[in-house]
Image (spheres, rainbow, N blue to C red):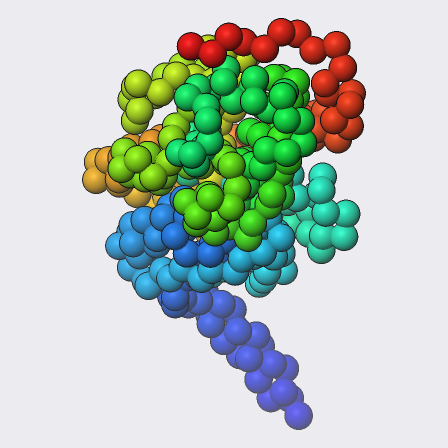
Length: 333
């Protein structure tokens, strides 16, 4: 019986020793959830990150597409995953800032249940229309929209996405009423635009080849100034004063992920985003690599959410209130 305390002591020491020998992170496959279908801008970013992080962390990193509800289905999946760093989300406006403003029954709160690792990229949006739409510039579009309130259609990759917000801002600041048509992903919206089923949308720079081939017509950019990706396309703000908006994509983990794991992910991501070939890949798509600290990413998302709430409050006004006492439409160029 006197040997029992010694046996218990040895057992405790062995437990501490086992804990000290715990495998360092990561020791198995990491999954990056993309909350949209394959083929869009978020999917492109997720796959670039998967390749880079796998090389940096020494373990496979795979992409899993979980689309629907403006990106919130995939985000909810990650928010409720084990907080161990092996299930991550790459997402933007829809799932990380606007979702709770639009979907009251979400099972997660972005900044409560998800922990930002870092911003990844900032992205301009391009206002594109089907070539058969009889407009050549933003001024012409505004004139047509005012002549036919509520009849023109604008697709997006989902309710609450950056494309949706860009359209809501155009409706508000240009005093027009263009109907929003949400899809389950950017690629689906673009397919319908190419087929002539909708009139326009705000697309990410992955649409540039379709613009250059004449399948789509670009009217304006959401950046404050013209962009090197399409220097001949004006900023929308040249016609609608004060108009400017950029979307973002960020990498997040479930809340409660250990600080050491977050630090390792942040450092690996910063190293990936500093690689010249990665920056070139993003730049070719009009995206700017934008690594941050976790706190800076959290602050950016919080500020973006506040701006989105104000914008969506404007967008909820009726078409009548939007078009009452309108200023004259800009003259088509």
